[in-house]
Amino acid sequence: MAASVAAPESVTWRVHIDRSMWVGGVRSLMLQALHPMAMWGVWQNSNFQEDPFGRLQRTADFVGVATFGSPQEIETLAARVRGIHRSLRILNHDTGKKERLDQPELLLWVHCAEVYSYLETARRAGLPLTDAMADRYLDEQRYTAEHVGLHAEDVPGSVKAMEDYFREMRPQLRATREALETVKFLVWPNLPENLRFLSAGKPAYFPFGALCYYSLPRWAREMYGTLPEVPQPLVTAALRSFRLAVNSIPESVHDYAFMKPTRDMLERTRRNLEAEGYDMSKGLIGLRDPRRWPTRTLTPA
Image (cartoon, rainbow, N blue to C red; front, top):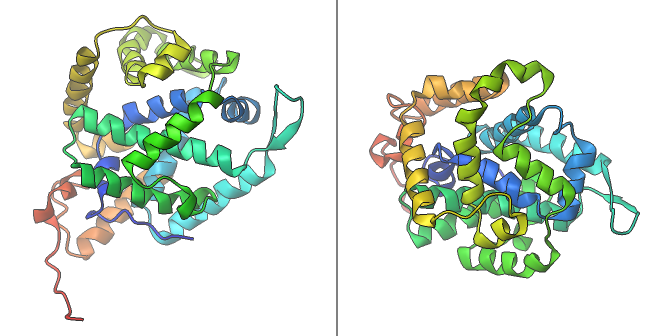
């Protein structure tokens, strides 16, 4: 099993520490839902309909631990996730047969939809990444894909390879009833009983949900047909404004978007990095600046 590749010097760190990840994460759920078996797997094996925000938060926590956690924390979480996936089955509505949830092709689809959503959203929202850095990010993610049981060599490791993969997958994708329900919720959530007190804030959420939807590729939006089309330059401008606004939130406040165990993990990571010589005065997000990295003495080979 691969150890974490997400040191502050990695492209993974640069992408995953950026707050545009919140749009990328919801976009990835919308994209993942277009694979019928992947969608049925979520619909049949989770409480997404009753606790949708909990699922979103658990996904964010998994990415947070996989990026910023220690190798032991990552492996403990990954083993638990692999065990859960191994035990679950999906009823294939097309064949009437039950199938394993941890099929490599399903795990690969979920992984690719997730990481490519993070990358595309971050770049479009204004995170400066060269083409070489984008390729390196996807190459790094080939090894983090091992956490869910994939083999690195089977995972697209460049932008070209990822785009080729999505072209090959498109004939297998469609907007099932469950997918349409999911994207409708993600744009305009139907709050469960314990969150009804937030109902007054739903109109404020809608622009965020719509932004996630409009950031999907055109072919995905055409499959859904949920919202009328808008000029894409407006979407890009909105993504950039969202990123600037959310990146300005103090890290101590932003951490409350995660569950307490993940908040505790992030605090341990800060302490460990400070002990290693990183300048933590601007928090984890400040480590995008190489001037805050420790000066390392290289030993001649």
